[in-house]
Image 1 (tube, helix red, strand yellow):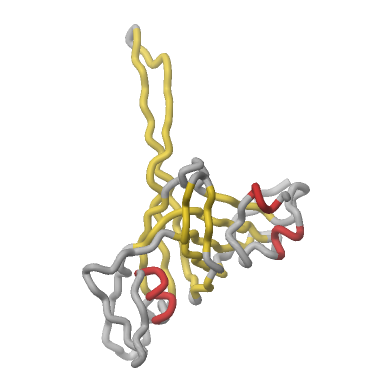
Image 2: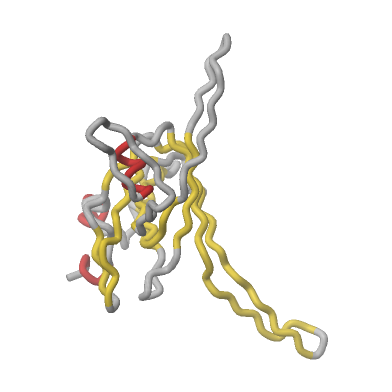
Length: 192
């Protein structure tokens, strides 16, 4: 059997984490963020080694911060306001303020695999920094410029940091995949 490499990236969603109390998590309805181009998820794993008698006798790891980097064609004002904790005013303008509080939320997306199935992912708790913008004048050949946005995700208070399912596997429930972006996936309530 060959590998089933990832060949696509689409359907970015962000859902505000509106409440995290006593192991209970409440998310708002996920909002789609258009224009997904690339995404990189880099889990921060911290390793420690115990040396005794001139060799390693134990090794242990702990989960650290998960770094996220997204390239999007363009963050529309509504998506920008959602991620940055600001609002679009009556004139359609977004005013950034140093006192804006970036909200925690969950990031969802799916990635097509070589056989045409998808891997579905929710990163459960994180926030984004102000996007990086670059601008370039037009010349004889047009060069598209995207936006890069970086975020940091952490484990929730219950220790969970990611939920994912691969379509086409025996364990993948069709109803879970069909409703993946309706709500942030929660194993405790989904199986009920």
